[in-house]
Image 1 (cartoon, rainbow, N blue to C red):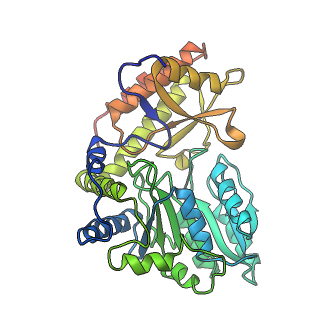
Image 2: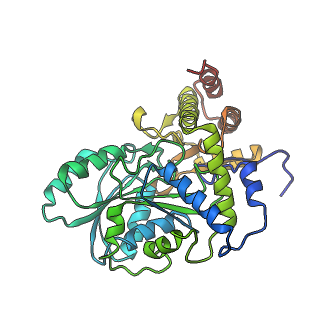
Length: 390
């Protein structure tokens, strides 16, 4: 590979940029994870993640990806043959379906439009019909990474409250957590899962789970086999500031530093920054004359924008051109969207200058492939970003 000057621009919807402060915090010798210094590290991370999730309930940290926490959510609360209801929202809904099916659960998909958020009214109708309470869990994606569509989890939680249905509500917040406000307790969520490599500004390797009292109680009757993923075992050790097996110690050092950075910026500013960067991205896309995949503005993600590639232009050639010529990685389409969209990540450790450079790379790539553009998208984004800060 020829040498390429300058930093590689990582503009994926995960993994995202890792701050130097976090890298330096991780760049140290491991400590004894059974020694007297470890509980201070573990407890600071567990306490900090409760704030991120918006919960007073238990939070678990696994050395895993978010997918591992999917499995943990299911095996700790359900039994073989249990029926669950999953909103069909995109590629990662299908991922939940695959894991649940392999575990021997009876999966029912609630059909939906991938360009829209999860439909709370459909769920209301479905649960109202379920007078025998066949469904033991409802699963939704807060921010579907493959489509760039955000769902109203509060409305889904309200459905469960209004119908009095006892199903557990499980939510995937992998590409939304630490970027937009999340309220695990207020929204009546039982299990929320996430990962380290997106909004939390860390490398891949940690999975996070917030668990309600109801979900913890469900472990007493759950019959799916579990060992590594056992919440009760994790809880027993966490009470003393330890883990039941070797934790990812240096990742915890990084997490502690990332949490300190969030505290310094202030959560309202974190959320506002993501709103501004996402709006600037969409203005660029619309100025180019391209189509944002998410059709309704109020549901458009603040962390990732999926862009429809015009007919006759290969999205694969476009991403390859941007990588080869301008040393920038963009997200590709997933599942049924693999040949039709590319994705611009705008989450985590990112500011206006970094986003402007990324949008320049997208515009240059489009011009290299002679994609007809209506206007200069970068100029539209910069005009918005330089407006007075309210």
